[in-house]
Length: 151
Image (cartoon, rainbow, N blue to C red; front, side, top):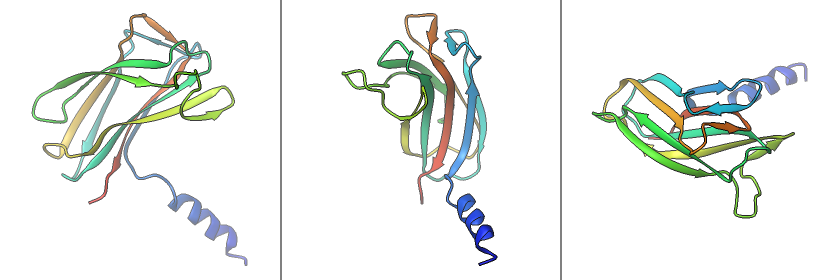
């Protein structure tokens, strides 16, 4: 019985996520993502195995749109690649997707499933908000993470 707290602590830390890469950028207290405020991440990939690649966003209930447009530039393959994607943050009835904690919604979406980088080594990604408005209100944090997809 005296080892129960230690066992619970060990169990808590061993049941975490399997993030290979995790980068988060908190936005200023005014919760505005400016068009000129890029999210950049550089990271190393050690093995040529499948990975699941995610984008995450934390926003308040004051976020004015049901989706967000992003321009994503990466060097995951031999040459740089740029995609423009639209990610739905709510359903057509205005109910937000993701987990809610107070007035903050955390939403994660899979960008690439079981993706294999061309080669191990250093890679980078740049994520920009790509809406028609210069500043997006209600955005608290931007996240990018990579999980092992299994072998």
